[in-house]
Amino acid sequence: MNELRDLYQEVILDHRKKPRNFRPMEDADSQAEGHNPLCGDQITIFLKVRNGVIEDVSFQGDGCAISMASASLMTEVLKGKTPQEAEDLFGKFHDLVTDNGTHRGEGASLGKLEVLAGVKEFPMRVKCATLAWHTLHAALEHKNQVVTTE
Amino acid sequence: MTIGNIATKVPTAGRLFDIEQVRADFPILQQHVHGKPLVYLDNAATAQKPRQVIESIGHYYQWDNANIHRAVHQLSERATQAYEAARNKVQRFINAAQREEIVFVRGTTEAINLVAQSFGRNRLQAGDEILLSHMEHHSNIVPWQLLCEQTGAVLKVVPINDAGELLLDEYEKLLSPRTRLVTMVHASNALGTISPVREIIELAHAQGVPVLLDGAQAVPHMPVDVQELDCDFYAFSAHKMVGPTGIGVLYGKREWLEAMPPYQGGGDMILSVSFDKTLYNDPPYKFEAGTPHIAGAIGLGAAVDYLEALGMENVAIYEQELSAYAAEVLAQIPGLRFIGTAQEKVGVLSFALEGVHPHDIGTILDHEGIAIRTGHHCAQPVMDRFGVPATARASFALYNTKAEVDALAAGIRRVRELLG
Image (cartoon, rainbow over all chains, first blue to last red; front, side, top):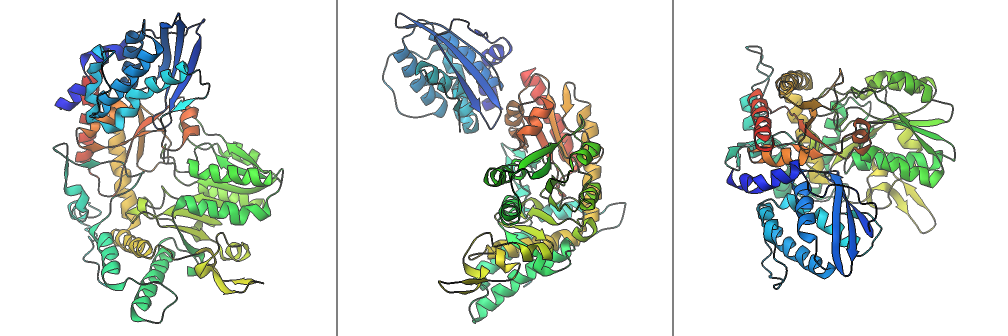
């Protein structure tokens, strides 16, 4: 039961109920769609990059508590970061939720994203936690195809 | 070969069979998951196996392992005998007229692909129509889409109502002189709905149209008699009926199987081969190319023995009672909505919990030791029909109990506590 509490922490439940930056963006520079065909989760990430930094990021979608909270938290930490810093953060976040021992150097700190550390005890849920990040990656690369977790 | 004692009918105290004795036959049910007794309610995905099935497979590999139909030695003789005995058991189980009408395949999916390619490919042409329902499993959609790409035929989808029941009058309207085949689920894996198969078949036959039934979710839960149904093809898998994975059955009427070309080449499907001409074997061997899943077929035979000892009528009554109880108990949970409320159902309860994604339900229930399925159940068109991306699904087998249903209900209340 402790593991469950770690997974569904108050912060996660709060973000699920009141997702931050949950809106479409009319003047986005790029957007990408992510899809987890196994659970039916769908997410769209909107991105505005100006002067080399992420000026605004938002999302819309429908999914489980983990995928929605992860997306919400992600949009909160990305503003003001460079695309490279965002990619580095994705790497570190991936390590966090998969309990991967590799340390991907210093740089951007995970900060509030660490509330998702409980996911590592639930390997089946890693895809939920990383869907938003995979989709962000596609948006940064200006890829137009739909991202899937499969 | 002896396969141990099978739990027998105990017609006392209103009980159809001794459920505790049945449960004792399934070693996997004796374990704990996350410190809680395992409550396995993902039977529509695959059912657990009784000791008798597991032992029959072990016996084959330990004592009789040899290839079949080829050698003259003792082991091959025994293996052949056991493999063909399994065919007889399946014939009896679904009451096929002849043993030659039972083709061993890998499972329901391969059975459907076999019919699509072997029956459909030569017979269908551009503009021909294949009729199926809105609640088909992907495996009874995609093989036909492949066939349509190859032949120019088109799929026609019979709609369902909000309860998840096939609209028979719409079906009747869609049946046309262009219809070449009706392929329909007998019992839906996502909704539990039992299709009105007798009417479906009668209406199709009145127009000379053959019918394939996807029986994957029907055979484990009710008596099935292919002669009484008068279906032309019937497909099902062993692993959903307490048998092993990787083996299943295509039943086909003899005259169809005779007329169909082989599906795959090699091994038992030939009589003689020269570089000029190959003579094909008769059904069912014409469709069993290569070394088959001998152990699987033997395990399937043991599963048939097991189910027959309990009696499929009894299994059906027991599971119906259990799922009626579950529907009643779960209906009392605030915010719970059933997806699929047909009058005629097998023990499949698909549901949505207001404000909670099925995956979160699945994870929390797992921590209570309860295994259910969450997702689209390989039936995305049905999910679209009901406007949900996924559902949580509890599905029952003959070894489940009311106490397990109570555990499920308590688990769902726990989900509410945690996620609000």
